[in-house]
Length: 319
Image (tube, rainbow, N blue to C red):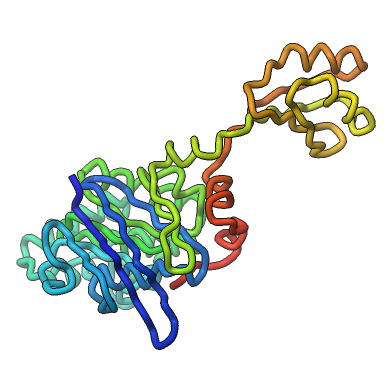
C-alpha cells in the first residue's frame, strides 16, 4: 500500500528550475532512498514534502492527506531528522527529548515515559542526564533521531543520517533505521553513501538535474547492470605479455590487467573457469585465487546517470 505519492512536483527559484516534474511513490513500511549529486534537487524535494517550501507546481499526498493544503495535519504524522543536529547544547538528553515531545502536545507523564524508552532503545540511558554538548558526534546523531520519532510518527525523513560520524556509530544508526522499519515505519532517506543505500534501502530513486532518472528495487537495479560476468584472478606472475594470446584462446572473453599479479576475465556469458585454469597452467602461470565480481550499486549509479560516483563520495551532498 502506498503511503506517499508525489506527482509532477516542480520548484523554480527565479530562473533556476531546482525540481522538474518529479513523480514517485513510497510504500508503507519501506526504506526509500533518494540519491543524486550535489545540486540534484534532493533537499528541495524534501523541503516541499515536509512543508518548509511551497511547490511551484505538482501534488503531494501523504497518508491520504494533501500535504500542500493541509501541511499542519501532515506534520503530526511525520518525523524530520535534518542533516545538522538541531537540539539544545545546554540541555541534557532527557530534557531535550521531553522538550521536543511537548512541541507535539504530549502530556508530561507520556513524554517522560517515551523519552526514557528512547534513551534505552538508542543506548543513551547513561548519557541521558549529561548536557548535549558533551556528546560525541555519533551520540548526538542518535539523540537527534530519537527526538525526530518522539511522537511516534508514521513516516520518517532522514537527511544524510551518517555524515561526519565514526564507523561504529554509523553502523549503529543503520541498525536503528532497520529496527524502525521492523516497527512498520516508513523511511525516506537521502544519503551520498552509495554503499549505505545498498545496505538499507528497499527501493531507490536516482535524481539528476532536478529529474528522476530511475526508480526501482535494489535487486532490480543490480540486475540491470549484470550484462557482463567478471572473474578476478590472482596469479603468481603477470600475463601482460601474453594477454592477446590468452584472449584468442578464450571464446567471447576479454582480459583487463589490474596489476602485476591480478587480472579480470570479462564475458557477456557465464564464464567456465576450468578451461581458463588449464590454459594458464599450460603457459606456466598458477592461479592462487579466482573470485566472481558482482556489480555494486555504484556501478548502477554510474551506468544510469553517467556521473562519476566519486562526486557523491567526496563531498557533502546538499540541495
